[in-house]
Image (cartoon, rainbow, N blue to C red):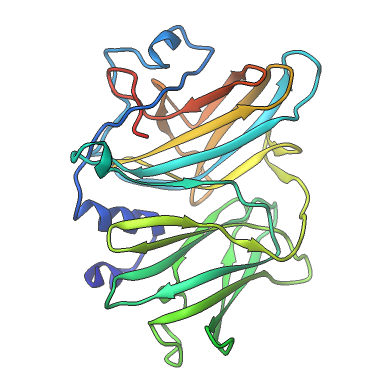
Length: 313
């Protein structure tokens, strides 16, 4: 663990993947799900002669946006509920899969995360921040210990439509007064006169075990997701600040429709630098998955699938 923490981290969750890969193998788990607009939907969206997994491919990390396009009837885009699961596949059986669920956080200009880092116990916290705005955002991080004493501050610039991710220990590594072992809080504030909202998620881990850590937003409602690209974002759209694929990693996107009319959505995946991220989900390789129909009261899943049509979660 310490060996990896000493490496310069370009992608937070890629580093966590390497940590996990060193201690666990790979598996193909089971679940159901389909894209309703494919001819192979009877086989859970996956043709039997194709496997979406490429464990030798480079690990890709970024974020996803789910945008309701229009209801097929009724003209409404309300009722969309989204969450995801991502993790490292293992060959130790279903119980050996390392995975974590993610609920989409609200956009925020002021939030707080619990911090518990300890080198001896291989404990650390990773923070991923997505800037969905058309302007760059400076984000101030303030670290406090359990007594409320401020230990240090750091400012991170997050370019427009990009994701930045770092370990807490990495954020303050240049400040000698900040101890590497800390139990306390990390305040995350969108700085500057624009005060633009960002999307934030934490990943708490100890060794190969990891879980997502939701933020507590202190800024209240920050409005709808800005338009990120043509047809992407806007009112009703949902941003998931972490997506991982390749190198044994898999991500499942779950989209439910609580409305009384069928709902059409699109899913767009982006790398950390804001460029398209191509992944294989439900037998299709793309960075944009369009014309996905969720029945009224129904659910649709997108995930890498094996030759039997099963996903990993």
